[in-house]
Length: 129
Image (cartoon, rainbow, N blue to C red; front, side, top):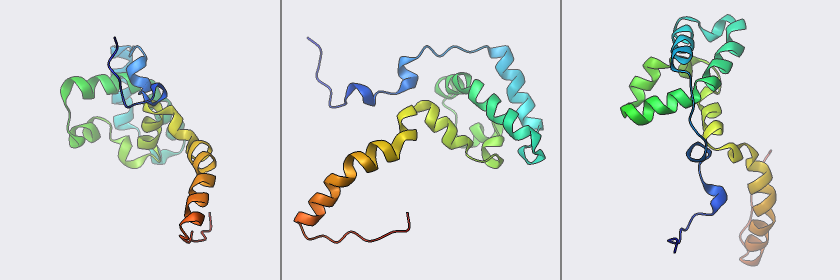
């Protein structure tokens, strides 16, 4: 008999389900390329984003095997500091459903929250968004 879990099956990490395959030599080349090419040079930003996405499995392998500190990760992948949204893009690779936050949370739970607030006479503040 399987032990019960409090987590729903769709809450599992995608990274746990996928086979983390990577080409170490190719990924090392891309990582070294990203160390010397800055994102501020316009044309490099798209390539940096592509290289970061394609080296994701290798990066996760490095982090999990080496127990890296945040400082070590930023030294190995300095574009995390200066290229817009790279950390968020890695987060979305690990948790693909997080990209649909508005769709799943706001539209799914919004009416329930409003209804509950109405029952308890709790005012919901107006916002610009």
